[in-house]
Image 1 (spheres, rainbow, N blue to C red):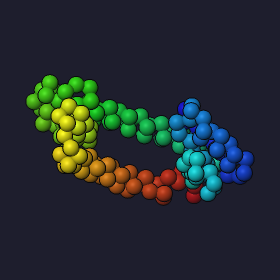
Image 2: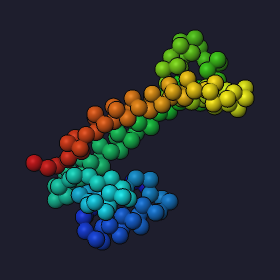
Image 3: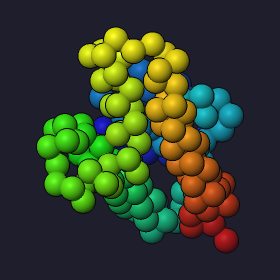
Length: 153
């Protein structure tokens, strides 16, 4: 469950602490939040009196989550998470190495089925880590703190 907690005081800190511990809470956003609430969720710079901005935040976060989930499923499928890459058509086999799932699954397959050593899977691990670093860089550039400010003037 995604939760938006509105407030920045001590009560909100206690609520954020309790909500973050719940197994039902998948994402906790606190608007505007404080240094203490940042330990338990994501503080969002938001004018809480601007109801349109609150609604826009919820829609935007859900849309971003949906797009991310769909993209992840497509990349996992193309990378061989659903079926062996060798069973795919030729064009998919040529696209598969451009997905992070391909390299993670390749390393896992080699470790478990071929009894490879960590040194043997180091190149695949390095490529998977390069994908992670690239996606982190993209996220940092796209979601800078100035881009998170919604509904403020």
